Length: 465
Image (cartoon, rainbow, N blue to C red; front, side, top):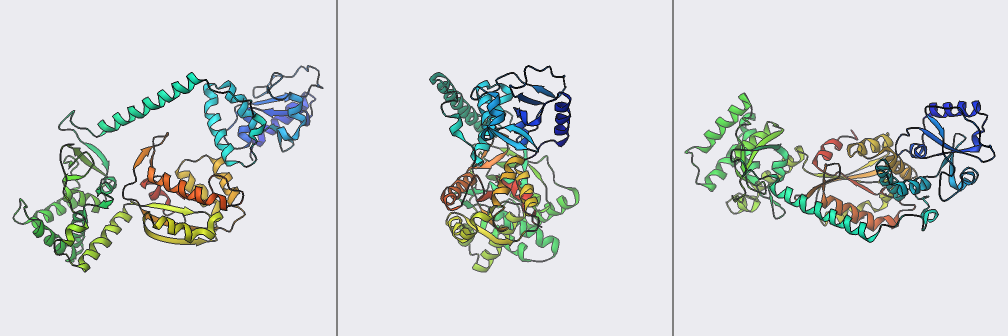
């Protein structure tokens, strides 16, 4: 709990000036939201015990006595006298958040709506929330309102689908192209849950071989090109070598887009994409033609074109390194309350996804700081993080970090317009549902954390170091 100490000192001075005892008032409204950490209060409203017969109080820019009664459920005197209806902090009484929720949901003004959402979340995460106080006291939406809301939601769904359909459509201007993160284009080269462009990896290796003066990548590239056939150039390696040197010396030409189809599969430009990846070009131009198909260069193509097991192993290892260096994986953190189930949960995860690595961390020195930094990435409100920390405080500071590959994350936009993987959402829900009954005094969510997207992975992977 927290509250501006200067405000409390000012309130104490105000009460003394008006000859009122602090035990004879109860703070109401946004002060409670401030106390429990949901948001800062704008002013200090209080109710006064009826034994003060209509006193004439001095005016104050921040502090005000509200009209009687503040709540339609309980008289002001009961808010002050009944300890079940208030929270005492530094000698002052604050009305419980359940009654703030009740008042706001009836008012339902624009300024109340975000508070209502936050208080619902607070109720989910707080074991002591008492819905029974509000039984039969909350507004019931009419059938018409429910129907209208469903229609609005359905309209939004269709609107988003239509918008998504045209989002990458460049038919409106045949010369148009757009910039996207280079690593995201790499991530999209997946067909039927398998990476489809191992030729990109071989090209990447060839660049490294040229600049580091070894022959492994160049040899694999030349073998690949020979098996592919159909090149427009008599000496494909010489052309690629010239491209590499030119980009190294002059930078990537952003006026030449990579040609892709509607699913962002590469149609033309794999050599340039490999260069962009190698030289850490953060964004790359793409031009979309929805009618074009794509080539198949999965690992099976290399197997059927006389690449031996040693060569296949080298290519696969380099693909994994390329994905890791571009943060194209998801980081799962299993929290202390399920430490005795770590192996069991990891086995469950391994049945569905490729596990890249798994590592236990014991007795983390700045555990609370780590948790706060982790959830700061996802813009989680401080009060929610504080509750998670409180819920985990009785357990040893023991976590497991599991890195997994999800080739088709199926991203959607959250309300804040950030991306979140639907696959990740489903995995988190499955783990929580299965193990929450095994955690004493469980509340949402002290079992597992998974980053929403690749950016979260990039931001979180070095937090412990």
